[in-house]
Length: 299
Ligand code: IPD
Image (cartoon, rainbow, N blue to C red; front, side, top):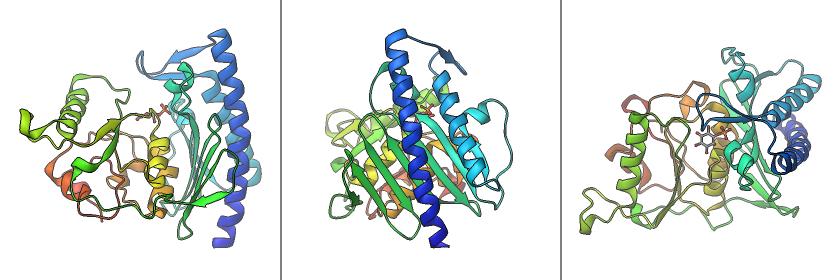
């Protein structure tokens, strides 16, 4: 019920703040000692002992308060915990979203805590402890940001998420991701090229968007679209924990999330930016987007 969700939201916000303290502590340790950074899949897929420690903290607190809730977490998944998604309430957690930023001291770093119920994301909390930005969303109850320790403000901060008549008025978040093999890299680069390029001066199919940005954290990109600071976030190949909390926050602010069924699946080979995506991106009120495949179009 919505009362249950209110209580769970309070618990989740407190948990995010507690995790935030550990993230700050971790950052200080890493910046001063250059402490342990491991490479997961390749030299750009980074994980630190703090990703693991934050996830352990979160998992422990959840299981002592809500012993029946299931748990999907980035680091547990990496360690082999891959239970199927059920109808049970399930936390979906990225302990440190923006690990590369975290390692480099670039402050777009957050914890992303999503709750899935009956296979749908219903609640999201994103907390960036460096910038003191707290985003919350509960399905049917709107989403909010509290900036620099201030009172919650309703999202979007702009009057509404404006329909974009064309892509060339958009500020678009894109990401490089950490799969740098040829095929996804080519799809990404072609999309970037097309989104940014000048159609009147040599770039065939160019949309000449205002510009492209990479915050380096999927959850932060979602949050910025929800806030109204970005018009679109487009990425190939996110994981469930990257998008779960952000989806609720962006949708509650009036955003559209597409290709989203993949939130509980492993990374899919989604196609690059296409005409079909553009149709979804323009002429609509809501603009948070991931790549969609032919069979993946959602309303
Ligand atoms: C990554 C970040 C990055 C995005 C990747 C994510 P992590 O999460 O959100 O911006 O491009 O797809 O996996 O590894 O920092 O938790």
